[in-house]
Image (cartoon, rainbow, N blue to C red; front, side, top):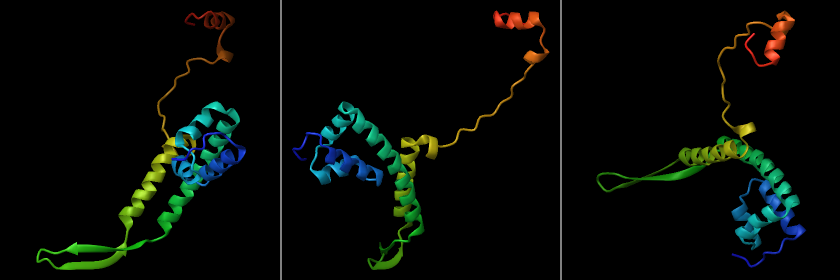
Length: 152
């Protein structure tokens, strides 16, 4: 890990730019030569930096969603090697769908937790509500009872 631990505007902006592109904080710190612990400490100690990081992470979630779409739309060919019972080896080219599925599922899982209001599972609420009487239909005595917390 790097030795830099003093916050600078350049370091903060560089971290936020990388996070907004969907890069992880860990890989960004490694590329910059900054310790991960220092970068996390800056989020705690410097409110303006923390606000910028939160915003960058939100943009990063959208970037990860776009990456998932690109991964889904782009076949990746690879060589699958199979050893047969007789010891012979067969190689064939095919799309690496399992690997692409893992890449997409990982991004979906992360963004659903990091930005649940946008990418989380939608909770379906069902039930029924019975309104016995509206306030317009109540007498003054009934309204006073409701206001006092008694059953009307």
